[in-house]
Length: 280
Image 1 (cartoon, one colour):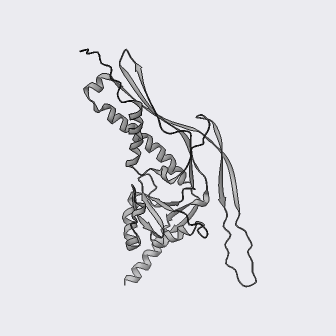
Image 2 (cartoon, rainbow, N blue to C red):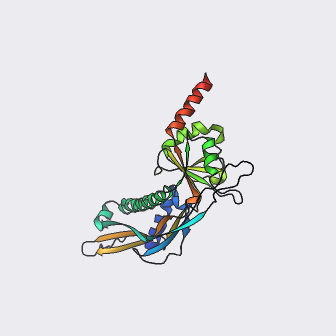
Image 3 (cartoon, helix red, strand yellow):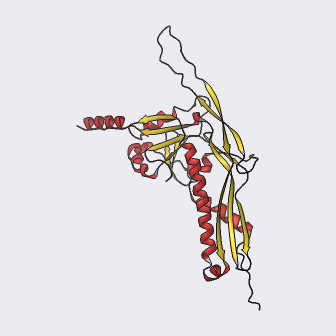
């Protein structure tokens, strides 16, 4: 029996399946974005982005008075570059023979690293929300006030909330029985629903700020799915290299579809005083 073996690891098909499966173990922010798979171009190519916004126009009027301003929708045009996200993992045949878990562990970190990078880019776009509701605490009224910022008169949107894990304890305390657990929305990171808003936790959110949004807020232009390439880098030295790549671009598409809930210190202090006076 020949002892001259060539260890090339997994086939590309198995590698790609393993890579994609990694996404199912985490709160993938891609599910909260609108994905467009029609992107054409190469990394560095510029594409034109349209961002929509609307002005407020609601006024309190007396008899005989009329509105002095209109609700106006405007579109801003900007340019974004197609991005290439890539990482690599090299290993020698001897490393594989010494520890068979090298490929498994290296592949796992490749996928997690790619996932975290894409997630961070998506969250950065959600954080660009310009509509803001300042509240004293994250309670039922805060979510109601935030939800009213969306146009729900004719079409009820599927509003979700992204919050930092360190805000969860105060959320549960403030919401109490108002926080409902709806099985239809159960997925990684889901903690409950309040005022029709499904709440999800993620470590990459900003502590003290909750983002309410719909899938229309952030878009991801995708050129193709995750690409996995494995090559025999140096046959003489028995060096192998694996690459993972993803082409696309995230962008904040509609300012009308995202709202920030932020804690206002003054409002928070006033609420605390009211609660103390009520307790007396």
